[in-house]
Image (cartoon, rainbow, N blue to C red):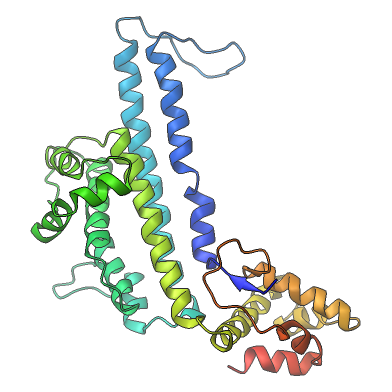
Length: 316
């Protein structure tokens, strides 16, 4: 099987963080349905909780449901923001310095106004030569709804832009089909009325955020790794970064390579395959995004001496 790559490190981290967010939220909602139906806590659950009266059980469950949806959206927002900051810093993906600065909020717009999350996402799409108005508009709705949740609802919350609203309303069928019958028009009305998102809206926004991240991730990989030669060049850069980061367990990065390169050819091959796995490159990818590495990639590198190998991955 060829060595390929399906996800970058930032996207792997994002999926690890929120990959099961919808399932976990739904698990909470199932539990709350039991509370609304009159269920009590089990004796071995060591939490302070008083079972509500039958008349108030539904209201208590509804309040907890709103809290759970709001908390989930806030958590996902922070994880997605970290993804945006991290992916542009991946040297091998070759984002422009302007995109890096905007994505990391190192610069501001005229008037010293900060770039919004939607604008930062849009800049990344532009860098990747992609036009994604629906996704950018959806991220704007997601971010502003999150801001309304986090901050006092009685304070003035900046409305979604007219452009974003028009884009979303013109994509009613897309959201209905793609996101389990989500009514985007109703979602917009709920946001405008300063209502907290209901479960359908929360889970759809969570799924949408992951899909936007995946779209960025795949496009970024395809841009630099669509041919075996380009992918080999990218992997050499990734290996260079891998051994630099491994120096935490060694006096220097060179020492990390020296240890990995001890022993005979077969041992070096095994060590190299492990290093590739650590950067996400393996023969086990179910849905590879990159091209495949040349068949002799591992054997060619394993034949190099330690200094030649170091030069190969660092002189870039």
